[in-house]
Image (cartoon, rainbow, N blue to C red):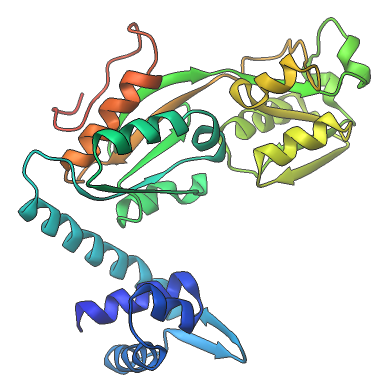
Length: 310
């Protein structure tokens, strides 16, 4: 089994298209086909199904992918460790939710690229349920995560800040004139929410479940901006971080509702796997995050790259 085969397999597994995979690994399509066939013969099982013009991973391919990811990630780390000294350089992959990427990170990204031009920084979205696994297999070096608690036996973390989470609606919504909105008021109402599994969505789901409250309709969106726009058009109530809707509130396109239920604020951390080698690029990025968006000085103690775990 050769490293080149794993690189081609990883590219095809992510692109699910022979031409795009070939372009990504800088070779001709026939070479992708040859290398994948050779890998399948060595493993004794098909890794992909070729269905007309579609390419899909087989069950064996899905089981093999995390191992290929981990091998290639470890090799990248070894390469960086050998060629880098104290100067941040090389690839750095960061997972971030849309709300943080769009409303917290652009200025930080610009500053980081100015300070560390040798770092090839990439951002990718993720699903909360798969985040820890993505860090374990090396898909991400770091991730920004909105969550109440971190598993210290699996992850190291730095606490950045608290995010206020707001229930909001259009100014014409009947609840816009209420002096307070309690959990039971959501019974039978239309809610526009992020996908199940999102940290602050989980908090609302738990509140409603404990109270035995059933909304009339829940419409899920993968985009926070889509939720914001649909709420402003009067399609229902939404739940998003304050930073996402602050501009719309100022322009009076939406109003924050006076939520009287349990607090739904959530903490934002930057996290990485406990066994991850802390590269100079990782350390520099975490330091910049702390400097620009970290919580106040009285935040709980935390571990940081290059320091002993707390």
